[in-house]
Image (tube, rainbow, N blue to C red; front, side):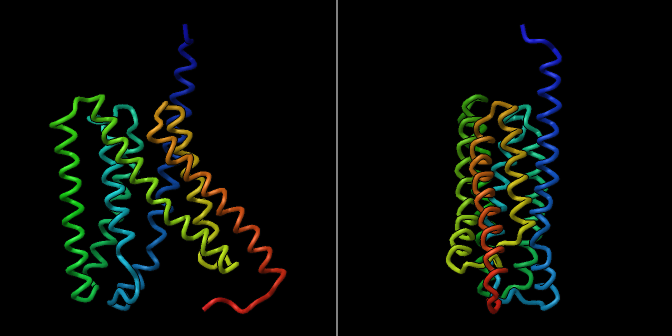
Length: 231
């Protein structure tokens, strides 16, 4: 028989990991603020793209739905972090649409409508066609696919750092926050015995370690070989 104190310890540890993951995620959510302050000041989206925010919005919606009690009871911290993320991304997309030129504005509005439609279909299908255990599997696989596909961004940054031998495009604190957030949710998933949380965040933590190692290596290299900064 498992002693009651062990359940309590697991609960406290998993809750601590969930809270830490939420706090670290907020750091990531606010990181684009300087970009959007610039867009508001210049009243133009310039050469910025709104596609990363559109995709992040869809990812947050899918993961938010996965964390809801009707889909996956007992992992409320997944729902809270992604609800906050969805709000941030929707605000960013709205600002982009407001200040974008007509062609970009129409394209982004169309994509935003498509995101809501896709999310509506996922919610409808998961409720109407699946019972609770199968519903969790269905939405869980979608959330894992969405999260892992987002790792294309760190892979691009890693490739860019190796190619340019410069860490200019990989801010240290952003990489550190990404690693710590992924590590926190990896621990949260392990403690909750939920591979749909632990697996993608485990991959994210590994990529975070790679980014930090590259940062240390190339930042030291740039100190030894003083070169002109990249334009």
